[in-house]
Image 1 (tube, rainbow, N blue to C red):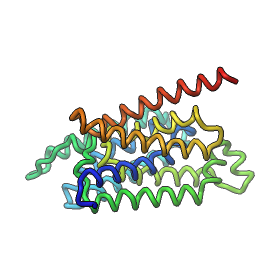
Image 2 (image 1 turned 90 degrees about the vertical axis):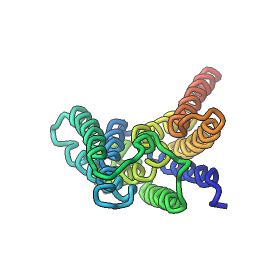
Image 3 (image 1 turned 30 degrees about the horizontal axis):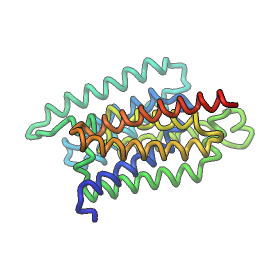
Image 4 (image 1 turned 120 degrees about the vertical axis):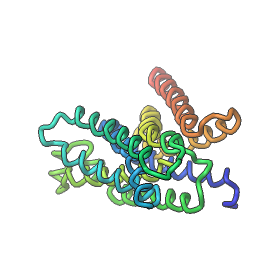
Length: 265
């Protein structure tokens, strides 16, 4: 069954949607969109590092994304102008990665595959890594759901409950790096943040509880992935951007449905 490239692509897209849907809720609640952008842009530098040392792409991307996430985590809450630093780190890492890739001797790669994704070329090993990463992210978030949610609602409430908000933020930081490494094959470094934010934002208008929002976000992400994959085949368009376009369409429908429900009350 896995010999069919469309089945592998479909499973890879669904695995990515599951991970990004769950984590995306906290990205939206904590307003971490720029944080995710900086971590995702560092993925191209990870590609360059992997090619330079002969590592697997996912290992290089994961290592550099983790380093970027920890750097940003260390800078937050220390009086720095975080938005400015995130802008410098995000675009600096992206530019450095693009330059570094072109300077590696004997390497000829299609950068579009890493910038915008190339899910149709997913191998069995890639599929195992994607679903393994999605399973780890889901398991950690399931085990830490109450702590993460409490720290998100109010750091003071988290302290009162015996939780350390900084530790919960560190957990989200590590999960962000894992999701970036998992998703680069599906939507690429430039669009990972879109898959984190848009399904969760669409789900917020439909859900009444945080758990419902997480469930809706995964469903919307899965529908975006399946719809985008199918439309890209029909219209011969890039898969990653098409998935994001479908997600935006579902966000618009969700916004309209939320408005209609509010009016009917």
